[in-house]
Amino acid sequence: MAAKRVTARLASAALAALVGGGLGAIALTPAGAGATVRTAPVAVKVTTVVTKAAASSCATGKYQKQVEGYLKTIGGYGTVTVDGKQSSADCAAIIKFQKRFGISPAKGLAGPTTYDVAKRLASTKTSACKAKKKGVTFCVDLTHQTTWVMKNNKVYVKPTITRTGMKGYRTPAGTFTINKRTKKEWSDPYEVWLPYWQRFIGGRGFHQTTTYIHDKWRGSHGCVNLLEQDAKKYYSIGKIGSVVKVFGRRPGT
Image (tube, rainbow, N blue to C red):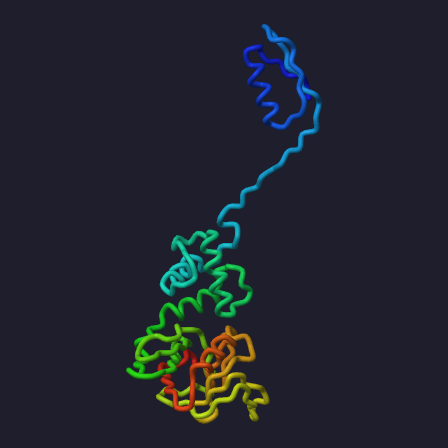
């Protein structure tokens, strides 16, 4: 490091600054006009601190502002700011939402699947089920492809997503009761296991899906498909005789 000259009246300040800055040993000439401060040559390690911008934690998706609005309406996923600008808080909320509803990849991008699921849930009106005033009612909204549970006419399990019968296998609307329950049912016609099976009409019932539930082109053969955690929850609540109310109509069926 080249010698650095300072006036005598600044010698003390220079000494403190150099020592405090970790630049190593120094030698001072006697105080006086034109006094010289010399520092021993040292290797200086420069550390660059990079501050990540809040918005850089997740990419900003096409439906950023819409998803922010829906998550604010739904609630329970953290603080979101409805401004269409990705932030650390928005990113964390969207990832939490995606993980809850099995949306892949769960990286905080407000893409079409996240938008579709959030919109359906935010648009669901639990009062439309017209549940019993006493006891448990399982509700299935075919129009929004959502489902939830009411108990004593109050929301007991918040709305979640479902996938019902595709075209030609439409899930019927009506009021039914659960008439069979098994943790693992074998489907003879489709040769597949149906985990957490709860039948409510004919060969149709609630069960865990065995495929990616967000494939819009896909549908069930009339059953009410659920994510694993929802199928388990429903099975823990249901019993023979539990009421199931199905209403609306799945788009395209």
